[in-house]
View 1 (cartoon, one colour):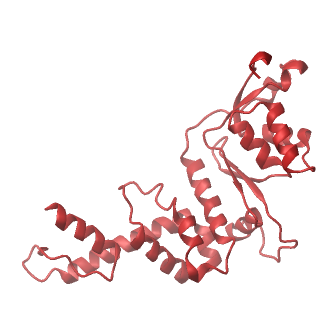
View 2 (cartoon, rainbow, N blue to C red; view 1 turned 135 degrees about the horizontal axis):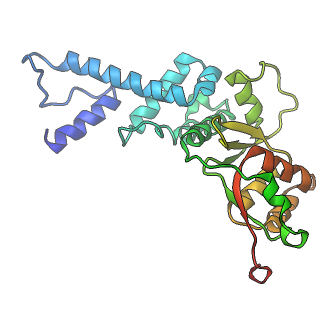
Length: 258
């Protein structure tokens, strides 16, 4: 198939407003419009299904019909560039952020980002989480210079909305109920073992874990978290770090290098 026909064929598959590409022919010599229409509908249905499978809580929030219409517009503007659909929809949250019919749901893009992070965590490389006993072997004077290696599945989401609670209520782990007070929540997404975990982080937790993941020492990360909020509790956050499995190893640094 010539390249220009391939391009028009791909564009028409994603955009139902476009006509059947010129130059196509059905195997039986008949008019290809009907066959192409069936094929186009099957492709759209498959791509919408891929997005639904990645963002089930988001679909529940807006309803099946609204989600399908939103997904169809996303597919038209951003058709897949790979036959592998595991990562298709990584840009869905940014699209929804500018999708005017969903503008009243300001929290929806962050719910989508949380679900996307869960998908990435599920498919990330396996790695054994850090054994808490390793930390107990470090002498007190070397603790503040420790560097932590992040788990391959780990990601952090910061939101001005109660994103973890909203996701849990629409994912079946919490009952639907009014959310009071409506305050921002930060999330840690990680798969230390077989299942993906979503943790709501305490004050300063996101800044602390992100700094560690970026290579900061324990002392530097604690300082960044304390700067972000006076409510930061190092002991509680360090305990949460170990319990979550968000890191796989520790490394002592030379004080002269700090």
